[in-house]
Amino acid sequence: MENFFTIIGGMGTLATEAFVHTLNRRTEAHQDQDYLDYIVVNHATIPDRTAYIKDNSLEDPEERIIEDLKLQSQLQPKFFVIPCNTAHYYFEGLQAATEIPILHMPRIAVEAIKERFPESKRIAVLATEGTILTDVYRHELEAQGYECIVPNQALQNKVNDLIYHEVKENKNLNFELYTEILEEVAETMSCEVTILGCTELSCLYEEYNLDDKYNIIDAQAETVGRTLELMEKKK
Image (cartoon, rainbow, N blue to C red; front, side):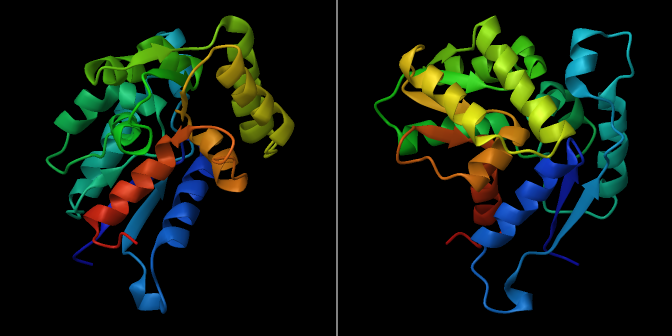
């Protein structure tokens, strides 16, 4: 292959599957040859990113991701996509390991706010505790002039339950819990836009269309859009 990109996935597997599904669904194609050329690396045994961020005595996932990037770089893809928000805590180290550009999922999500919700300033971020603790989204939001609002512990516990217990452990897209969280963000936290900054939450975004009720920016969906643009397949 010549004009292709590589997905460094498996963090988690269902999220990677959702990225690929969304990508294929949004590609304008009428025959097999119209779809994009890409390689999917589903490295499911990469250590948990949030667990390491909370406890540095555990195995560092960055080293494993760098190994994948170096190996895949030998094939010379056009760019890399890493459908895991928390992994972007390591972005600078990952990009330093390869000359191939890596799409920055949180940055792409924040850039989409201006286009889709230009008057909004108060932005909520729903993500893993690892992503919240590292301020990956806060840095991007504040750099672009937005106010970053993160959940209190009670709400974060609900988000954790949705990500880890419902989606990761049981493959259950819990609609009731998902909408309960979105309602609390919009009403109790008075946020104008909610960023779904976890690819497990992107699975729910893909399954349930709530755009008419809530102002949602899904980081994975926006990264799919950027991928299609770069591959000149934007609808």
